[in-house]
Length: 429
Image (tube, rainbow, N blue to C red):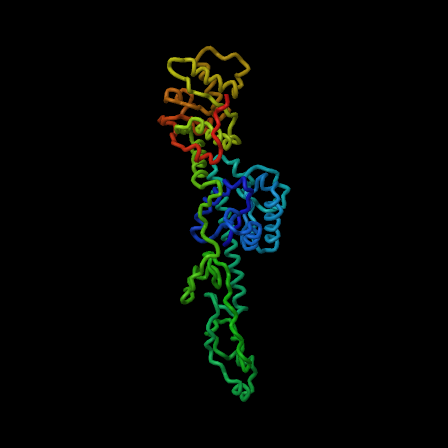
């Protein structure tokens, strides 16, 4: 089943994540996806996109504010897809990527995914969101396949086709026209008395009687779940043997492969894995590029922003045991941005200050970015209690060396590869 994915160019990273979660359905030959990044060099994009849209049995709309604002997506693809949906030629499935004013859009009457109208970017765990979307797409695809199979079974008796695909051989002995005339039996009676085992019980052969027998109609070519033409999709699943010597058909489109669309698959997947790790507890990313580490941390913080409180940067470069005031300064920098205690003079007692700090980060769940860490002694005092590691703040630590703590996931990264074409920028002062 051909599936057309319509999306705004800026949302290509979300399209990549969707393709990853649809991968099992592609392997099972239930669907075959296509999008604008598959346009080959030398092809006219607008013509190719229009042709693929017309051939698609299902159209997935990746809905965001960018999608609704772009003419090509809204007028060129979405409106035509809805016309085919209303005509029963295709199924349109809207997938909410970001929160936007979609309730008044033409597709609002359709039930969007994820179920409940919560956009993918609003889920704390993106993999759960895309998995829910994939299950919805699978349900729609299987429903369409069953509908197509039922329609073809209903049409087969009237067209004289075999349920196994193609036209059955008409091996019934024909009576000469003179014999029919001499016996004064009309043509319909002869047809009713003729043996029918050669037709699979689907009626008299064409051309019965003295008239020349017309050529057999061509086999009915219906796109099956495997991508090759067959008589009725899914007939082999019902226990029937396949037709003899089936002709292997070359797929109309190649199987989906990762496309270099300026959003490499491994880069997007690494970002998703880091985000999932951050949802489980503190993460330390390290490389020999300190500016790149900070830029990557800020990029991850942008993804986490809808789910957490304010973003706070704390530079640990000068934090050493020779300067015992560094821990107090680090905690105060967080309290000044997040805590309700910021309107009061800071406590002089270190235990009270630490209690206020822990209460604040657990209650208000900020995004804490500790940059340029050099040892575990710098990190450990700033972490929340172990019982709040997965439900408290999002803590991201950058370093130029690996630092191992039992409660912190340490990950080597390549900031330039993960950020793509973005130039690393230092942390704000």
